[in-house]
Image 1: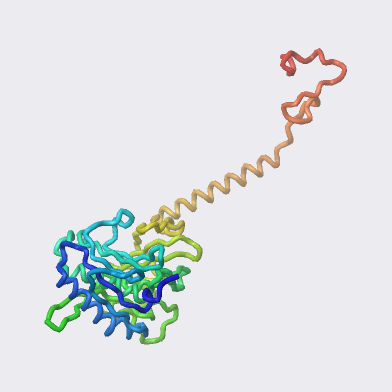
Image 2: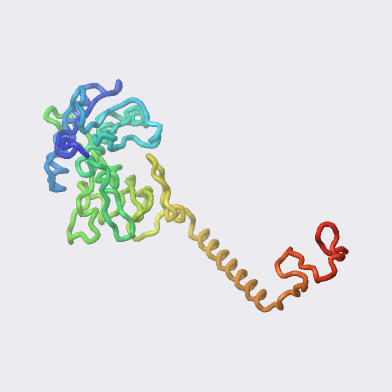
Length: 307
């Protein structure tokens, strides 16, 4: 069972990184709290969850941790969130990987990654919500993924500008949104289940394994080039594997399958028209000899007809 604090309690930002000062970690927590109260909660019609900086967490707290370590199960992730065995929610933000990118800074890139996870924890705290789309897939209810390449500033009382992640609105998950609907906070995408450049979505076919689709020219209903990633045990579905093949490759495979089916049909027809083979009267079951009585002398010592 998920503790009540995982749904309604504060989201705790811990600084376990030697590369982020506690002062900057406090600024990140404050900026994410402002974003939660002023932007995310009103857009999604939820009670805002406080975002607080703390030196330690209590059992059951929802924790976003700035860490210098890496996760061998998520080598391609800058951050992620997951539900622990006791029902608590944990989200590591990999500071070392983020600051290893050219030009990355704490109050832009680390803060954006933290706000990304905090925004999603507010709407999908149990990491189990899915929305049906009109392309036959179910999309994970992750509000920052589709527009994760877009950032905007939150200005604090001391004048510091902290960058936070863009996020999508409820209409993004709606198969039939009302006319004039807004799909994300910054106005980047123009329709439901559409990805911004640099964004991605986790999706699955009903009953299938999750896969990822990326926002390189991905518009619902189009046939874009897609890159499929595997992260945190997610598997590539057969449909996504087929999607990786080029159009001409698929056509050649279909043609080869048709030729193979034709050959199988032709052989079956030819064999049906052929006369049945002559069967020696001494055999009623293949490889079993029935000697004509009373002449067993025709058998050699191995029980076969002598040449």
